[in-house]
Image (cartoon, rainbow, N blue to C red; front, side, top):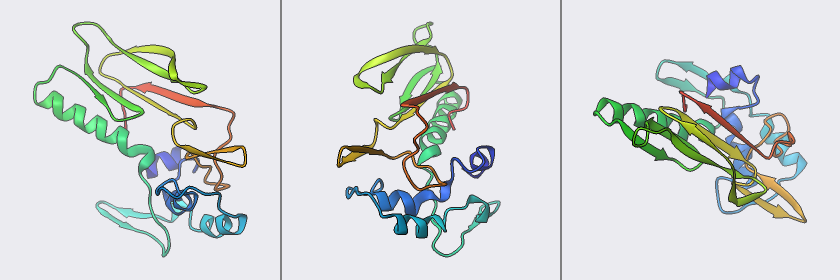
Length: 178
C-alpha cells in the first residue's frame, strides 16, 4: 500500500480509513459527513507519516490504515502462487472485482466479463487471460444515494470526497494482482 501511495503521489493513500468510516463505507451507516468533520479527518491522512521498518509499523495518534484497495489483489496473487506450488495448473479465483487466473481453461484462455458500469446486469466487454489478474473497480459497486446524489467508496484523499474523475469504472489486466 505504501509503495502504491508513493507511485500515485498519494492518490491511493492507505491512511484514508477514518474518512471511509465517516462516510459509512466500513459500516452499514452510510451518510454524507460535514465539511468540518472531513477537514479534521483529513489532517490524519498522510501516508508519508507512516513509519515502516520490516515487520514494524508505527502510526501517529489518530491515524488508521485501510488495505481495502490492495488486499483482495494481494490475497488472490498469494493464493494463485500457493496453487501453482501445489501443482494446480488451471484455476480461476473470484474475489469480487478481482479475478486471478492460474493457467488456462481447458487449453484456452480464460474469458472474463467486464461489467458495464451503466448497467451492472450486463457486460461491457470480455478480456481473455492466462496466468493473469483482472481487477475492476467502479463507483457502481459500493455506493449510496442521498438527495439525488450518488456517493461511492472510491475517495479522493485530497478532498475526502468520492473521486470524481469522470471515469465510471477502471479495469486493469496484469500478471501482478497485488
